[in-house]
Length: 487
Length: 61
Image 1 (tube, each protein chain N blue to C red):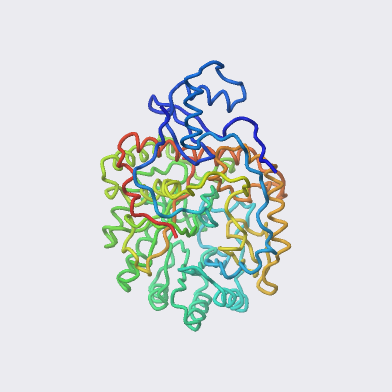
Image 2: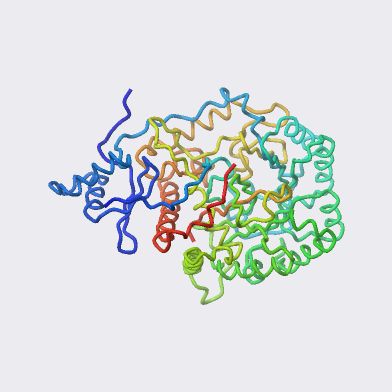
């Protein structure tokens, strides 16, 4: 069976810094091209035929096809992912991260939190706590079979420090299992790190991921308590208390910052650089995510001070600082937030699969529900991750994995994409989550909105532009990736 | 002239986009543990007690 060939390459053409570039999905390569070739390719991709008779451009394209394998016109055949039932043996053996929603309660009401009304389509804040029996069943299942080099159990909420007894139960089970490589990571808002909690963290050797969004003004705008009080001071006091009691906790601590509208990335980056120095952790790990609140009810979001520059301005300044530092060989001088933010997409592309696009392709992002990561809700229900709430149940602690449910989810996802991926130039780097097929108002499963695909393409294109910017500035601008690795 | 835009050093490993590194645009700030480790920017290298690197999610600022 021959793959379809509509006679045009799967590529993206753009002009940047006075030079034409093309990203070719067939080879997963970026190339600089002459204006004539760019015009010819653009016409081909858009289906308008192009400038007939431009023999020089045609010749260049032919040579690129022959010598570099670029601009192939065949499309892959889209195939669904392997059925969960067929992969039964892989489940559990490949599971390396178990996330438990220990306690749905939270003492904070962060404006961008998926569990508040701003995005209550997932799961609203509740008041349920996981039962000890459910903890035992979930952790027991994980400890029996978990694989990977660093299997981890993430304790999530709500606020997991509201359930110290359950944390102790998890730690006891891990200790009894004699699997010291299993890490226990507590996702906490960091506001409850009093002497008792610090003792718990130190005694059990817990890893902490603390949510902190940057300087006081930024953090407190988005992360108030349930009664509207600021939390920044309490988080910093808790971190200092922890490190005073247990200096080794420095190696088990990381920060997760959420950039929300009005948050300035460079300002937050400078804050985290200074915080790392103050805490004696010069390489304080800081992860970052962006709260895209488009479509959220403005009435539920905090108002920004007058004169706050658009978020895009801050992002552009941070990007410029990143490019400047990398081009000058000063990547290490950048702060932890900016490094984390811009390194991530570049790293993935740097380590991309060198093989050309094959005859078959499984579209729809990378998630294989429950295969590598598994979330267990407070009621014991299995879900692919903590982000999808109760929308996708794939089993529970009593019955184990529901392979029929996994297969249904995969089928719905494949159908929802409606075959559009074969023509998409970003198909090899699509990270679209299957939650994109849920109508957030009705909770029903349907087609994937075009905006979701557009968003993926925009994100990937941003990375391509950064890639080109960096290498145009200096052939050594990506040298900081040289010793990076993936596992 | 068509010229590939690539650094002169090719990585020895290849990344697979897997669950948790899906770079999704969800709202949550929770753990998104990833398998990609950028050794030069992390410390201490090869320290098994260091938390797994968590990549920043790409968002449109």
